[in-house]
Length: 285
Image 1: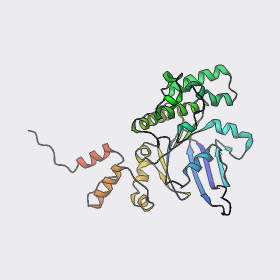
Image 2: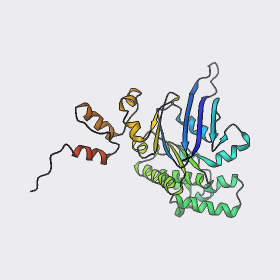
Image 3: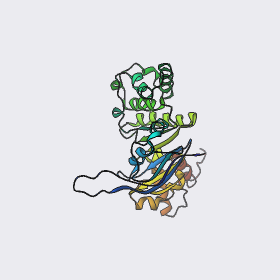
Image 4: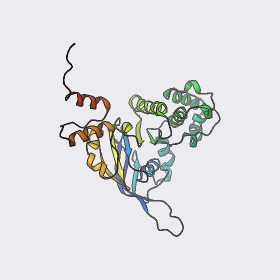
């Protein structure tokens, strides 16, 4: 897969409050996102994850280093709209992104701002709502939808702009388990069936293990990265930085500490299979 987003030695500092000195929230961060990849970005609150998300679509600009999107420099104002069309950003609270009183009008908002012809907007809106399985709700008022449905409408609004990449900043944090499942199923299908690059910022380890690659941030830097198995096998490193691991990983890690040669497991199925090797066979009655 070719490189799509590249952050090169990026630093960033927000404007300080009066009387305070500026402090970098990012310190020389470098990371790469490949086209068509599904990447989970993890870390504590305040580690710089959300700042990176906003740098990826030029909502923020680096105070040091460079961010490139498909070869375009985010500080170049001439390509700003093209960058934001290619990299859509979905926020944690869908209510902050829903602007219209009817679902289909909300989804049409982005393409209208891009100057897309009305006939093309109609086609995009219908396709985007079908992609997130919300077409039957196209004439509903957003405020009547569940949290998971609202988030899927917010994602449809991004899809209608035909992005190459969707960055989701903790999109399931405010949702119940059903809503979480709806949103995750949607973004995995978009990645798998349409080839849309996904960057998922999350605190849920069970969401991270489903990614192609995991990047862990800590205190404005990249702590470690790799496949989910490569990252979560580093239990000691993650615990040292007060970071969680999946429950299945935690269990087999503790069993290894008790002398059982258990593998690193990422989910319930792997954990059950590993434990079964130490259970006596069931005797036929």
